[in-house]
Image (cartoon, rainbow, N blue to C red):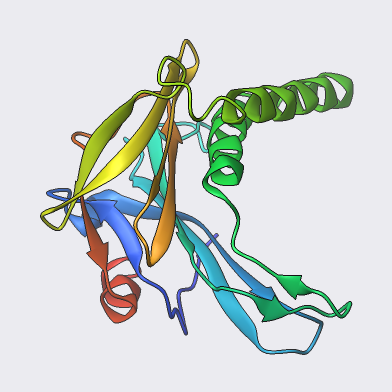
Length: 196
């Protein structure tokens, strides 16, 4: 499956010092207020290119998901959309990390049970975002600027979240990227570098 970044209008965070040819696009999402209404980019996820002979269903060692800030937009039902809180993206980070561990060969019943457990664990862990024992804070470097990184580690892997102002970031996987150093690619650079 090829992911297109045509029309990308948001920056994308990638690990610094990792050549873009060593990265692959894992997912990208768009949103809109109603069918047929203008859409906008919501998020882009990157991870390491899998080593040769890696099974297609194997989750990447780590992933970095950049979530655009889009502010309040009118919604189709007369309400509005709003950017999620840091706690909400922390829930996403933990839940996503656990969901990647569900075997593709699991029965429908087991998949449903594990999916529900992942969601419950994600909510429980995210509720403790202010607890430094659950989410120790460290620093991540983005183009020479320090940002706070909330980092949760557990037997299954790690989950991290950060707020960069222009975007928010979800990180998760079995093991972290090589370092907590990143660069924020502009939309045009990301379109060229990540789809070449």
